[in-house]
Amino acid sequence: MRRAAAVGAGALLAFAAVAVTSAEERPGTGTGTGAGDDTEKRTVPDFLGLGLWRVFTRLDRRTRLDVHDVSGRDRRVLWPSRWQVCTQYPEAGADLDRRTTVMIGVVRRGETCPPRVRTARR
Image (cartoon, rainbow, N blue to C red):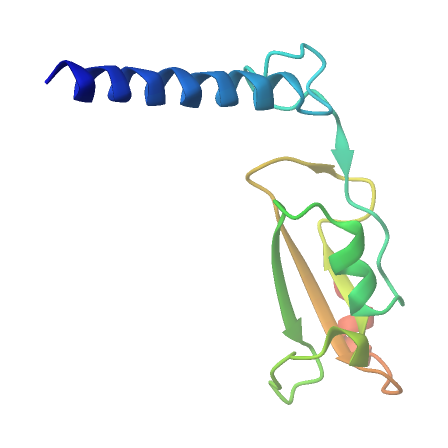
């Protein structure tokens, strides 16, 4: 019985040590403690006219992303390298936080953005 309690306590201490170490090493927190939200201010880059692959490489992995075909054909967007960005919301320079979803409208490379999309909010 004592051995099981000792093993359980040891595992708990090891888990706590790993949690504290990883919290101290988090970049961009300013305090080094890992407490609270990130203090690093993030903004939305300008993606208009770029390839969709750039969106995936320039946004943080934690950012929510909604990608859709704006050509009117309602195609699935499977290969990011074959698509280019026509619209984005929020606009470039807007603040990004955990609740922000970046919406990207795309067309296949070589196609032009539909006029109704170009005049809509970007």
